[in-house]
Length: 140
Image 1 (cartoon, rainbow, N blue to C red):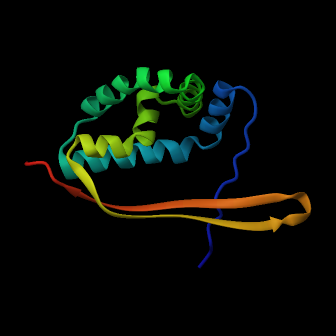
Image 2: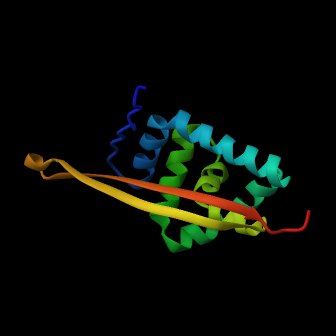
């Protein structure tokens, strides 16, 4: 069995530029994840794409008020991935969307693995992961 390597993505610049570079380099992965979530919400819980995008549109002012650089970076990711800002927000606000749909986590595992493979250069590599189980609590 061949092990798949995780992509390494490097970006630099102002928030929008970093987001656009990331969105461009990870375009296929981002687009695939957006479709996975919209398919899950539609298939399992009957949520329609326009409803979810409307919810995400409503989060834009709160994100901008919290941190304008984060919003600018998300706008860059959207441009780089050829998606709307609202579609990018779906990935970043998926927990909030699930809760709004009445879907609550049954259990989750979070973790981080750090390994110092390149001690000579002083670099530390880390991997983050999350595994969640969701249960629909809304009446159908």
